[in-house]
Length: 84
Image 1 (cartoon, one colour):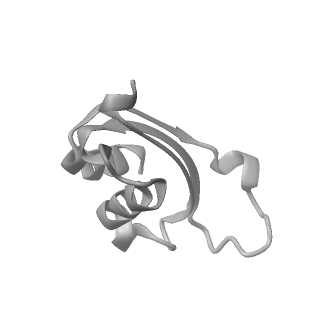
Image 2 (cartoon, helix red, strand yellow):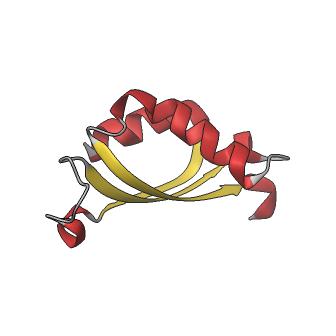
């Protein structure tokens, strides 16, 4: 799943992408239908001039069909290249 998520996020031309699978920390918690928990740090020029909400929407658009069944939770830290 990590490789699939990273491949999808290549559409945002990231200069940095760090994805951590935190699923083991959340195994068996109520409401989890089996999808994984992930923490994403991504830096992209596509985020320049955009609010955090718009940055998150871009990430969610790239991963939409994986949620909520394959991705149950996604923590996103999205940074624009002009903020680095």
